[in-house]
Image (cartoon, rainbow, N blue to C red; front, side, top):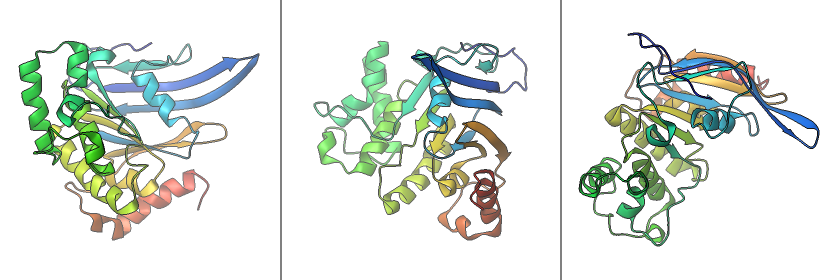
Length: 262
């Protein structure tokens, strides 16, 4: 169950302490994730990196209040302000999951429609968001008329349309080709800096985790556990050539060591 942090000037927006999730069924137990402890401050872009099956998505589901953590774990969210997951969370998945019978702007408006937000204001915001993600002029197109990268941009706009406090992104660029993925990384940073939203970004790409994150959490598999959490001291805005720097290489080596890949 998600609780809220006490209202203090320096309270983290998200506080996770010794978070563990155990699935039970047919007389067996499976530990999906354990020992997850970190703080996220408002406006952070925190990357969660690790191999497939290490519990990254489970952490997002706990934050979205789709799953509950085990008893005795501490999950605090909101930083002392009211927080309702159904209203205050936006999600972006590996696939854009756009409805093929709705135009792009109507796809973006879907959360606003579900929440019953005023249509006129929501549509104006949707248009502004589509312009922000580089899709101005594509409002009346259908998903099949857009490339994979463009569809993911629309999915990001959809996640922002109801003005949530927290954006959860589950390997959103994992299905894209390498060149499109790098372009979307640059777009992701631009969108984050313009929207100033708090974002948790799940990825299995070590370079992507370092390039995007202001902080990085490392989760290992077998058994799933949190191994590291650190600040990424690389200046924003970031360009792709930062990947050639010694400091970038040091951060990637740190993650490789934690994953036993050095």
